Length: 223
Image (cartoon, rainbow, N blue to C red; front, top):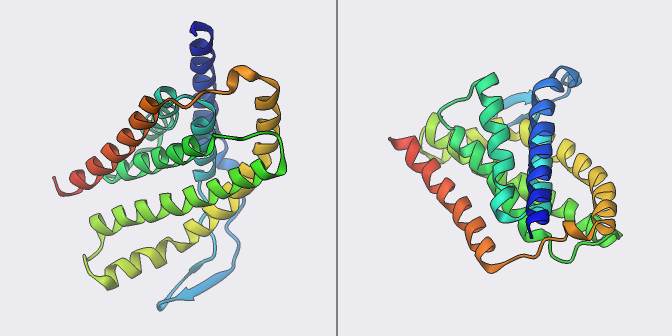
């Protein structure tokens, strides 16, 4: 039991280190935004707006799959806390942080029955797409609450302006998660100690943390 706990802690620290380094140092290697534009709702903007979301998103999903509930949430929250000190953030940071916690929760709920096969790769990729859509819907909702008129037109404008980010998130993160799932599942298959059993209390804690952060995110907007 102690050995498994140490393994979980080492894995969590490794993922945190990779996430911090990736979000800070890989930013300069992003390609230039392609000169392709779309017009929706009278707004013209690039197809893609590139950021380092895919690094933290992929790590969040895999930490949810790989780690126990008590460790998995520490990973994205630590990455965001440390890198936000470096980059800075806006007052809706709780929405971005809780958005990554939602991704962890989806990974956590996906881990059961995974093995080194095509079905599991597709399952992880599908979880990745679902988590991206949830993250973007949630953070855009936060932007709408904080920065836009609380009307249907304000909500529509908010989501239209966010489309280039969402498209980039879908393409970059889905490709990365799918590519990483192959070696990840192989290693997981060869190392039985990484097969963490899902306990009812851990599921309760995982869900409670996610919902609590979501609630705090909304409250913080109006305080």
